[in-house]
Image (cartoon, rainbow, N blue to C red; front, side, top):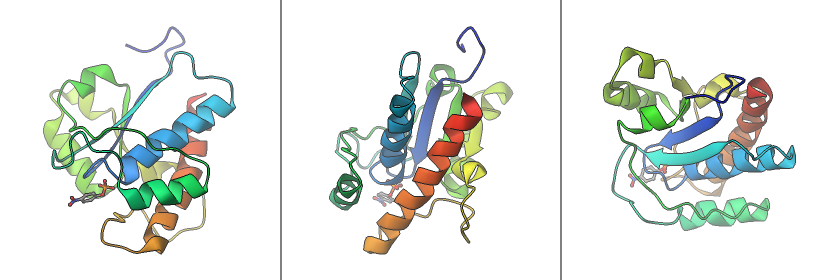
Length: 161
Ligand code: 4NP
């Protein structure tokens, strides 16, 4: 169900573990929406393909890098489920693995059309066509993720509003 103006306002960000990329995307996007004084009517959440980190706060490295930019990440990890295709209008995957796993999970053809890659919203100059997994990377990997998410979240908001 969309809002009366039929714009998608229930947004779910999905990555593999739900402790690095998608909880950061959730908070950056929520901040863009709040900065426009527009939080009413939005449901913004994140989830992971896997359940390994269920209940955990985001990875400490992600929290530290995000905090340096003024973001406080407090999401508790959860696994994505088939029910999420009813509860959200847009389900945004961070990389091609996430997208194919979400397609496997989608219960109907209609719900399949809710799945979009985050890279669709990149406008910055980058050699990436996805948001790369920073889990086994150093500090630059986390900074790169935040740069890509910052760019994509701003564009996502302007396309939806
Ligand atoms: P995320 O990063 O998908 O951005 O949350 C990862 C976190 C954990 C693992 C992989 C990626 N892991 O294998 O536990």
